[in-house]
Image 1 (cartoon, rainbow, N blue to C red):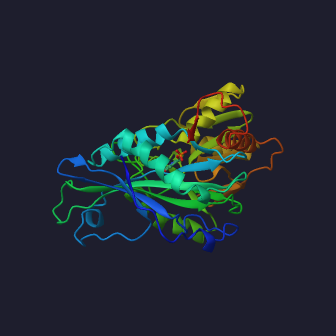
Image 2 (spheres, rainbow, N blue to C red):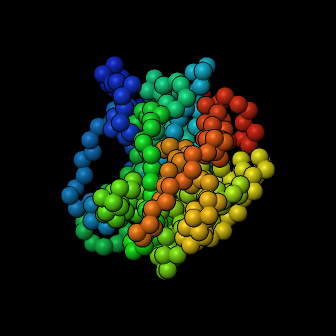
Image 3 (cartoon, rainbow, N blue to C red):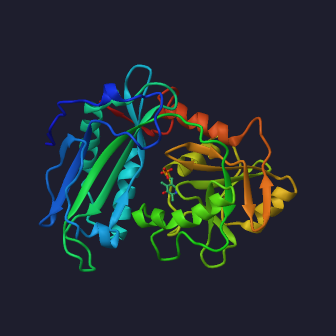
Length: 349
Ligand SMILES: *Cc1c(COP(=O)(O)O)cnc(C)c1O
């Protein structure tokens, strides 16, 4: 059903797979599907390349744009796997609905992913940590700067080869002033503007020597919510604590997978509001053993320390960290190196 225009000049031989900066290089093909006259048209796969849009296209003015992040993995036998892709499909439509963007048909999404991955399968390198990062996104393309929902959109999927990378130690700052999301807002959606709005406060935190911000609730700044692109977990003693998802917090696929693995491995979990005060006190008493983020890009990202107001705290180095247990367990499932007990993997064949 999908029209395919193959590239005549693959870039793969010119790509250095041993030195990839995240999200800089893109594979040979991309998927494009237009919405007009009230329906999604036929998807097309064509060589990756620039778009031509009117300067008045609404996405440039009112930010009607949503995206997803997922990965394709290759196992030792060259089989290609996705991890819980139906979750990403459902979530992009949830994000779209909130941004008044029409929902994308499920058959198009999966057919496009499969065709694209089959065409660009050589861009997925084997080996733990290597993957092809997939970026589905939707933008409002209708021209004209009147401030209302567009009637024309473009759904695309682009693919970027990714390597396991060590980004250095991550220290985070608990936000006291700026907010990422508010009640009734769009925090739960992967809406483009959520990310653009974080760059300025994050730059300020970087000047103070932190790499990321942990956002707190917009009303009181007393409760910890999540990081810019990761959900956040705390280990207090041997208990794992994380905030519940709501309309301010993104419902991460990695987060829900960690919660399931914790439950199955008899790790005590509390999903509840986590106050800044509680974490500061736990850190002072030496009860805060770990903090880590969860998200598709890094799977699990351990956090070495945090800052709140003028105070800075360092976390201990744990031999048997929950972070490495979850990372290892999840990656083994993603790379088809262990039994998939929960039906999370999806083979592209
Ligand atoms: C994408 C994202 C996450 C992580 O979601 P995953 O599905 O685990 O990749 C967490 N928080 C925010 C704000 C995000 O954008």
